[in-house]
Amino acid sequence: MNYDIIFILGEKYFDHPLCGVAILKRLLEKKGYKVGVIEIPKTSSDITKLGKPNLFFGIGSGAIDSMLRNYTALKKERTWEKDKYKKELPDRAVTVYSNWVKEKYKGTKLIIGGVEASLRRFTHYDYWDNKLRKSILMDTRADILVYGYGEKQILEIALRIKEEKSLEGIPGTCIRVKELPNDFIVLPSYDEVVKSKEKFCDMQNIISSNKNLAQKTDNFYILQYKFPKYLPSDLDEYYELLFKRDVPENMKGFEFSVVTHRGCIGNCNFCSLKLMSDEKIVSRSEESIIREIKYITTLPHFKGNIDDLGGPSANMYGMDCAKCTNNCIDCNKLNRSHSRLINLMKELRKIKNVKKIFVRSGVRYDLATDEYLNELKNHISGNLKIAPEHVGKETLKAMNKDKGNLDEFILRYKKLDCGGLSFYFMVAHPGTTQKEAEILAKKIKELKNSESIQIFTPTPMTYSTCMYYTELDPKTKKKIYVAKSFAEKKDQRRAIKFDKIKDFE
Image (cartoon, rainbow, N blue to C red; front, side):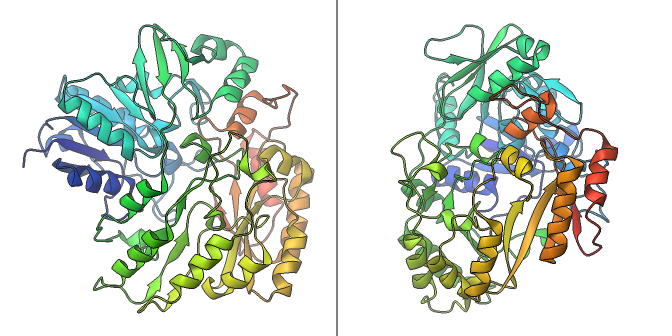
């Protein structure tokens, strides 16, 4: 077959809405394009198996940055026996795949996207090199970078390449140019941030997906066009595409998951979600979610259970607001009633041939109302998962997770007789001393049901990573304590001496 577009992917492709490339492929095919996928190529010859595309190659490493996938928080190579991923793709996979395309198909349009490209679109601290690296556009020499969710962008890119038009000005993309256009906010340059950690903090304070940004790097400017507006009707269209819902073995248990919304208003400093979209919640319509579940019930391999109903935080469905640019979670106008979500969950329980609808996505406990928890009783399998991340005051402040009262929530949850709780925590985040690690250890012993302890890994472009690299609070420029040596990170982890807790590095 002569393909219009060929995606090169650093993970197994599966025809399911939890696979980002599957959504793009289905959507492009709906518009009449012929789309091929090459998964986990081992050599440059592997990318030639489908020939040269008429329009472009699209390259991504998958749902996880290749360096995070290949190495632990202590920079040890992950092994098949210990981790659910073996090293199937090269380090810095997007760059490697891009260079293979440049080698084999000179002059072919090259589009990069996904997590690895999105979070390396400007100068960024690379934990594995322990230095600042230039925009991935410089290393790959790609024609354009798509950041965050890419449905609107990929359709516009395909149309423009087909019509031989310029790729400049597409919302949700980044490009390299020689001249700085008007109406762009200029970030400190690559040379400036390499020389000054305070300038790196200045850059971090400006970065947002909601702005047109530019950064001078060598003789180029890296331009970011602000993120496009996605509407509930867009999400309805994407998630109602008729996927086969085939999943690889490591995704069993998520085969019949249903995404209710995109975005997260939690604004955690260690999280990259706000760098991937516009920091607001976009919820699907109730009618669309009902239609999708009714479609799932017709599939021959459906056994009666919806594996998960949710999003980044399951109980943020319906908390849409586009009235201003303020942080929603701190706004007193935010609708915290959960009424829309509660009504949806009650309606879904009425659907014929559905035995149980589980909520396995994490829940933001500081937002959860008693009314929501009472409905949630019908949707929990085992324990409800929550992620306090820490209990030390200074650490929680550095994480921007110092909202809510964990002890008060636990008492309320038990009083409502909702079932058990399991907890996720993190050590060695900037702001965490050994004393705070011991406070956490004492709390974990009291809780008795902590599911995993994660050692903080600095990932590109997050606020916490800026703190880790600079050892400064980016806003105040005041010093902040950072555990940088492997020995100290291990000491913080060892303070929690419980065999049953899983290490997740």
